Amino acid sequence: MLREINFDGIVGPSHNYAGLSLGNLAATRHAGDTAFPREAALQGVAKMRHNMRLGLAQGFLLPLPRPNPGFLADVSAVGDFDPALTAMAWSASSMWTANAATVSPAPDTEDGRCHLTVANLVTMPHRSIEWPDTLRQLRTIFADSAHFAVHGPVPPTFGDEGAANHMRMGPSHGEPGIEIFIYGRPGGRFPARQHEQAFRAIARRHGLDPARCIFAEQATAAIEAGAFHNDVVAVANENVLFCHEQAFADRDALFAAIRQKLPAAQIVEVPASAVSLAEAISSYLFNAQLVTLPEGVQALIVPTEAWENKPVRAFLDAMIQGNGPIRKVLPVDVRQSMANGGGPACLRLRVVADPARIDPRFMLDEDKAALLESAIRGHWPERISSAEIGSEALADRVRDARQALCEALNLAELG
Image (cartoon, rainbow, N blue to C red; front, side, top):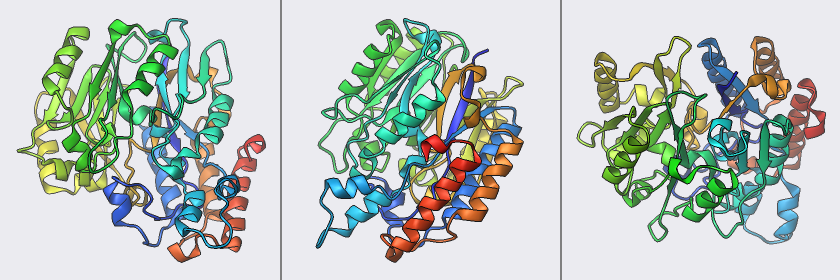
C-alpha cells in the first residue's frame, strides 16, 4: 500500500553555526554562535516521534561522515588557508533532507517505479560535497529495484537543490498527480539555487508525462528577501497548495495551470497585507509540513517560531476557524535547526511508497526512537563553539558518535 513517508535527517554530531549559506538569513545571522548538537538532534527525534504518534509513516536518514577529509585534500587545505574551508568539511547540513533528492512516486512515472535523483547542491560549496554519501544511503534505503530507481545527480552545470523546490499535488498520495518544479533566475542579490534545466532533465529522467508537469519561476523578490528555497514560501499536499502571495514570479499563470491540470485543487494564499514576506521568512510559516492525518484531515506542522509570531498566529487562528482545507495547526520545537536556517520541512524528504519495500532499518518505531535518543545522549557533543571547529579531539568524538549510531542501527556498512 502506498503511503507518504517522511524521512527526517538526524542532526549530526558536528552541528555548528558557521554561517556558510549565503542567502539563508537565519544561518548568516547566527554565524559564530555556540551550537548544541545533542539538543538539536533530540529536538529532531522529538519531531519524528510527534509525527509518528499522529499516525504518519516516519523514516530517517543518517548524518553523513564528518569531518570530510577528502574535501580538505581536494582543496589542498594545508598551511595557510581560509578557515571557512575547515567549516565546510565539518558542516552537518545534510540533516536538511528536503535537499537530498527530488522524488517522483510510482503513480506518476512511465515505468511504474518511484524515481529519486540525488541533488548536486553545487551552489554552496559545503553542500556540494554531500551527494556521494547521500546517494550511497538512498541506494541502501531504496534498494528494491523492482520498485525504486535511484539516480545520480544531474551535471553540475545546472544547480539542483532537490525536493525543497519541488511540489506534488493530486487527489491523493497513491493516485497519479501533477509535479510542480520551481526554479530561480540568476542575477539577484542572493544566488538562485535551482536551475530550470536541472528540473527539466529530472522530469525526463523520471519518465514523467509532460502534460502533468509544471515549471514555474520563483519570485526574485522572495529570493532576495531570504527565501533561498521555494519551501520557505510555499508547501503543497495532495490537492492543497499553501503559499505566500509573493512566492511566485507569475502567480496567476501558475494557479491557472494547477487548476487546469487538477480541477479539485484548493489554493490557500496568505496575503502580504496579513503576513509580510519578511515575517513569513523569519517565522518559517511555509517551511512547515502539510500532511494528511489518518482521519483524512489536513494539518500544518509549524515551527514554534511561527506559532509565536503575532501576525502569523493571527492568520493561522483565522484560517483554522474558517472552512478551508487546512483544519489543524500543530507547533513543534526545532529551534536549533531553525537558528541554522532549516525548519520542519527542511528536515524531511517526502517519499510516496509502500513501507514494506523499504529497508526496515530506516523506518522509525517507538523502540528505534528510544535507541536514537540513547545514542545521541551518550555520544553527541553537548556544545560546539566556532573556535572548536577543526579540533582533532572534537573530530575524533564526532566520528566516534556517528560510528556508534551506525552500529546501534546495524548499519555498519554506512559507517
